[in-house]
Length: 341
Ligand SMILES: Nc1c(O)cccc1C(=O)C[C@H](N)C(=O)O
Ligand SMILES: O=CC(=O)O
Image 1 (spheres, rainbow, N blue to C red):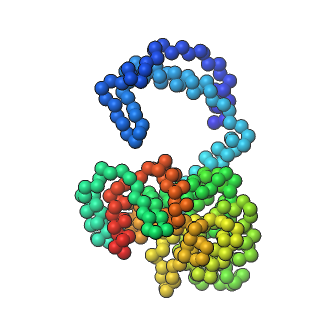
Image 2: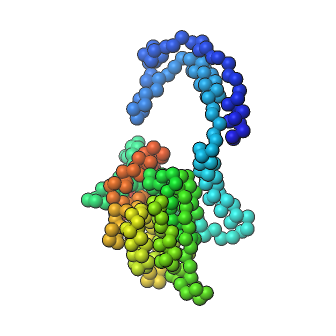
Image 3: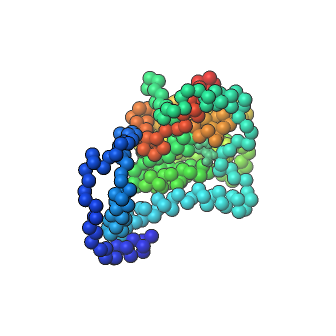
């Protein structure tokens, strides 16, 4: 890419003289003007279009500046980051291993869920394009294209170049590339067996070492990502464990991105606790949920992020300028199901 850019940078471009006379916007317009979201497009005469295209091609070609140094490195690391998830999936396929990184339920959604979807599809709201946002007192909810896009919006909105983000291993595979695509630096900490060298009988025997976790917080730490119940090991964090993480977040003024897509899948008496409910955590936590995981319908791609207004407003900006909105029937349906349950 760099060589290509350098090459084209060295090329001498001929002077271009536009052939067509400049035409005013009014005279360009024929009878149709399409106005969509404040962007006005006009139909142009065919010949103007070709000329414009040629001019643009020449302009772009002549102005490419080779990327060097810091910019080039940053661009490369962001491009590389996108490959991480693909490699993970390919390795699992190549070695024929069970891929615990992916959460696709292998059973169909219950009948009331599919029926509700059919009702939403046959309703009258299909032409609307908007994303449902909910505010209830101080609780702000942004509906997203799956929990995946809630995570993406959170990283893009809140992580700046060089910010450190603590990620607990083992982790769901997209955290790392998403942090890097936002320009952040992942800082890893592993869950370790509760008793060093001792047997691990259940996922609860994998724990964080408090001193080790404390040592990962630096002045550059912007956020920590937690996932409870955890994918892939199924650990459901206990209140004391969450409190230990919360204390460090409050002490260092750090955000917490809490991926809770499996909140309804707890077994053997384990109780799911939301870290956002602990003192001092509400205003710094983004809680992420998934309609797909909750209702066994991952293909609907409806998820959400819950937080306070000062955080959700930035995520909303990212959401609006990437996907713009989620499929209306899927949103309507999921919100109804959430209310019912
Ligand atoms: N497991 C997920 C999570 O913790 C957060 C967000 C999304 C997921 C997912 O599993 C999404 C989906 N199965 C995928 O990997 O594309
Ligand atoms: O799997 C779906 C999602 O919420 O992302």
